[in-house]
Length: 108
Image (tube, rainbow, N blue to C red):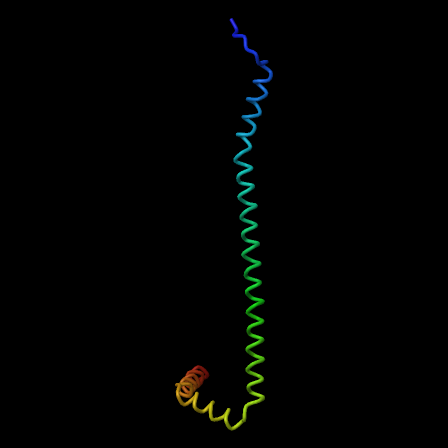
């Protein structure tokens, strides 16, 4: 004997089928959302990298401009003395001589 209810059996079947459909589609929707978020994150990372590169170019241009201005406005004798003082305090000449010796040895 069937039990009598106030809800039609077609309605309960429809709701249970809809619930199963939602449960079945959930993994695919979750993966789709994951891929969309990952693409968005990668896009933001690339935008940040490009912005950083552009700012770096601006800074390099400003440094080049300041160095060029300094070279053009500095007394040549003072610049030569400063260069000699800088080279005298480092091993640049020894490093260049060693590098030249290595290049000469490779050419033999």
